[in-house]
Image (tube, rainbow, N blue to C red; front, side, top):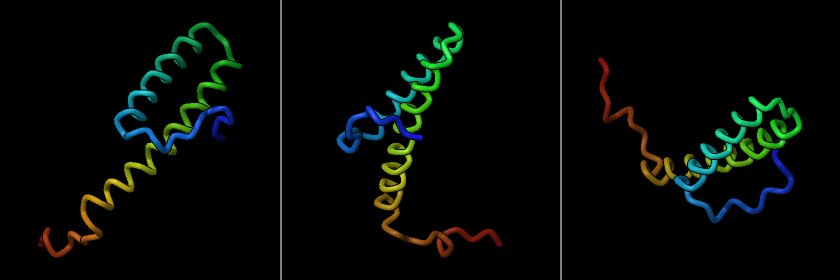
Length: 78
């Protein structure tokens, strides 16, 4: 489930999303050590929101990078 209070993430780059995910994971580790289950759940929802957008943007970059090319004709394993 995504966090309802996360603002629009469309303006962030893949690098910014990645650094935010790392930052939130560090905060999650601290919250887990403290035993704060409610905060852990909130952080997990926030991380999921950022990860979904990260995956979408990564897929878009991959599509742009190979321009829809199929690499079967370039890589010959036989």
